[in-house]
Image 1 (cartoon, one colour):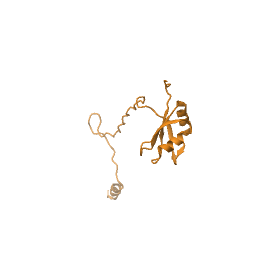
Image 2: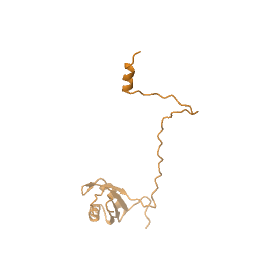
Image 3: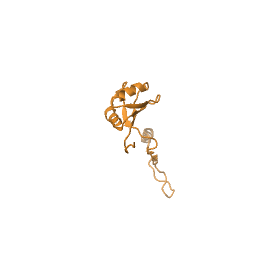
Image 4: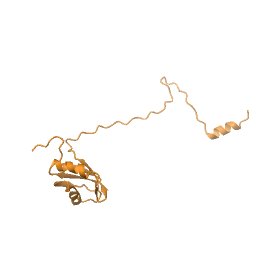
Amino acid sequence: MMEKKGAFTRVFVLGVGPRAKAEAVRSHFSSVGEVTDVAVPKNRGLAFVGFKSPLDAKRAVAELDKTFLGGAKLQVRPAVDKEDATPVAAVPKKKKKRPSTTTKQGTPSTTTTTTTTKQRDASKRRDP
């Protein structure tokens, strides 16, 4: 049986507590449909849940997103296969423009000099 484009049977769950067990995740997600498998990598704060049908997976995203499991707020999203994922292009960092002290011809430009309070006070005390 060929799945429709955009149909998914697995969901990606963020916000899973560090001590969450696969059994607890399975129990939470079985409320929306038949769960086929659960993977909870250690100390990652995430889980993958597989469903028997795409309809159950869609229900999980719609009904279980922003619910709580063991005191942790979950984010439920459709899981994407690595083969189907589009790589995110690296965005080049913008270079910060530094003020130039020379002009295009290489001659020094005029720059303003700031004076400190001590310098200003010292210049006021001088006799004319």
